Amino acid sequence: MARRNRRPLVPEAREALNQLKADVMKKQGYDVNPNQPDDVKYEVSKEVDVPLHRGYNGALTSKEAGKVGGPIGGNMVKEMIRMAQESMKKK
Image (cartoon, rainbow, N blue to C red; front, top):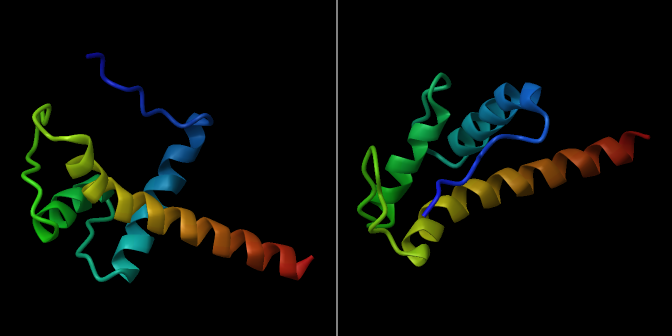
């Protein structure tokens, strides 16, 4: 199976997305290295008992991958919605 292309639509947004991920997950109580925000997935995987390790994880089921990615992406979306609502209130 081909690896998914995880590039943002606007390449210049990558740094801001990484910063958002680091900030959001830090608020959730995770120890996040701002230079490597993707590493938080390993901490989440330990918490939810998913055998995630560096490198190829092709043996993970969709359910296991969702247990790791869901809390990260879900919290990022919630924060973006909160930021948008605050922005709309100011206008």
